[in-house]
Length: 472
Image 1 (cartoon, rainbow, N blue to C red):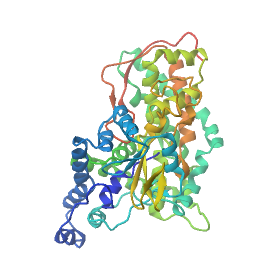
Image 2: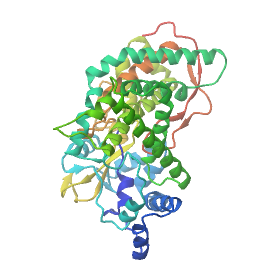
Image 3: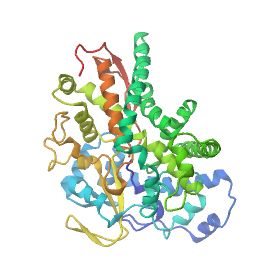
Image 4: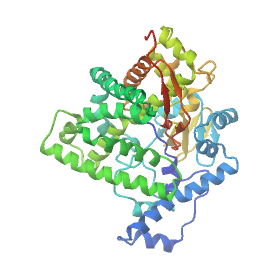
């Protein structure tokens, strides 16, 4: 899963193109020196620093025509803002960061050592308040999350969990994934036969990858709903400018999941099983195991990496193929493969909009000077639609020869941990769905997720027809 560092960047008060707000010293002393602020006050202050003020800046910048802010606020229809940024130059300086949209530029940002992730510095005017009021539960954008660390810590954490996502391990999971897909589609078909509405996100796209990763990690079936709730809660936590009500809902869910995960890991210490989480509890790298905080952060991220991307991949793929019957016909006739179709879905409608890196040393990017401490936003969607790499880039074409050259899974050391698993589940899931149902029509009421960084469908109601006469 690739993420943006924009929200962490703004709230840290690091040097950006936007002026840093001035915090009265008295207010800062009051907040940081009072260890037991009422919970509601602490929560509200933290929201104001992390989301309230940045959200106001973001919305104002969008109204004033800032290209990056317009892109972030665009929701599902990002093509116009991104192509405007592309036309403005290879490296565009915006309110919050420099922005790159080209394939070569995005790949450079993600692979060169001069660009790093990790937690920003703590010398900004708002950072001490944010730290003093922060919730103590795990968060995908806070260390020791894999998404917020660089070597050597990142290397140590990743070495412990890569085994479950290797190509060989994923191939062993394919048969079980096919079984789960069949079970879910049996239930979907029965609902359709009874005339009940079918939402393929709730009935298929979400439970399929969650069931797979939960079995791998030793999560009991009765707890699968909790994992889904964690994914739903974590997704908007990656965005900038949440409203207070949504912020409280997100962090309440994250805290509940953190509490559950702690109890689950404790149970696995007492009664380990043949699963990854049991291995993590006792794992060591270079003679050292994970601390409790590191263990929770790593386990939580592996859960999310194991299904979040695939939920969006499946829903985006079903929507695209249902609305492009000519492309679906090419797959069914054998003119295109399901493997390549998955790659084209990932290219055309990537599950993640953008990611970001900080500049570690003064350097150049595409002939432009970028200074240490500044931020560069790498727009994955833009790289995937680069006309220098992809012919007719805004056309969905399942026969595209170089579809796999997309960067939807990021690149470099932070290449998506669950990429191989997502590809396998995407191929199995889409093939099984369209082999089962011949005619698939989207119903009124399909809605995109309101998240700005993660891209997929919240609901996708469909009308389903009988199996096709000839499935491939």
